Image 1 (cartoon, one colour):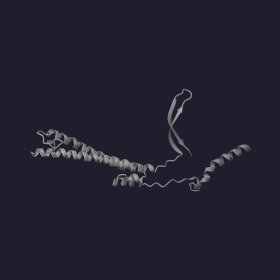
Image 2 (cartoon, helix red, strand yellow):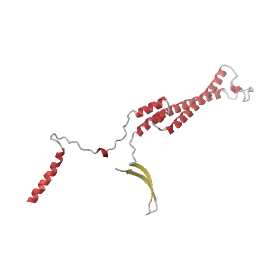
Image 3 (cartoon, rainbow, N blue to C red):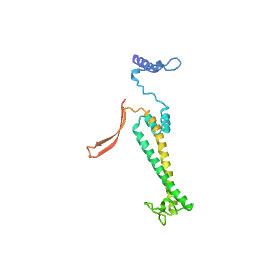
Image 4 (cartoon, rainbow, N blue to C red):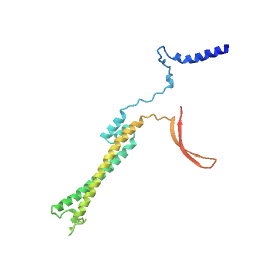
Amino acid sequence: MPNKCITAAVISFLFCFPTLAQDKEGEKLPEIIDERAVEFSEDINPLSPAKAAFYSAVLPGLGQAYNKKYWKIPIVYGALGTGIYFYINNNNEYNRYRDAYKSRLAGFKTDEFYFDPQGNPLTSPRITDDGLRRAQKFYRRNKELSLLVTIGIYALNIIDANVDAHLLQYNVDKNLSLAPHYKLNEMDARSNLGLTLNFKF
């Protein structure tokens, strides 16, 4: 009989214990946290991605410099420079063949294709009228394609700066890592490849 009373008292105490952490109105009392056990990361700047994108829009490569990804700046200018070079080259060739074709439509036979590379006049042009039309079409298409590629590279420069600024604000901790691993199975002498996820508390 005394054992039953003791058991009942212990059970009643355990059921009542959670209520000790609440006040009369049912609200939990504030817990005491050891500040030494809490590590605060750097403040996240929500405007950082927008700033990086804006800087890259104003001056390509400036957003990458803002993100401290300096190695990307030569890539940005190299890609943009290549696109601009091909656009200018195709535009010059298009104008060259267009001017010759317009000269022939006006009745002149003095365009560059009526002369050989040494400047001597020819009885018949090196390129016919139909050839001039095909050349204009070819270089106009290439000029437009070069312009689209250059605009695409400019847009990618802005997107890259924006995405980089977002990723830089993620908490990349050494305690959380994902790495490939290689292991030789000693039972059947086969090699096993995989990924290892390490998470340390």
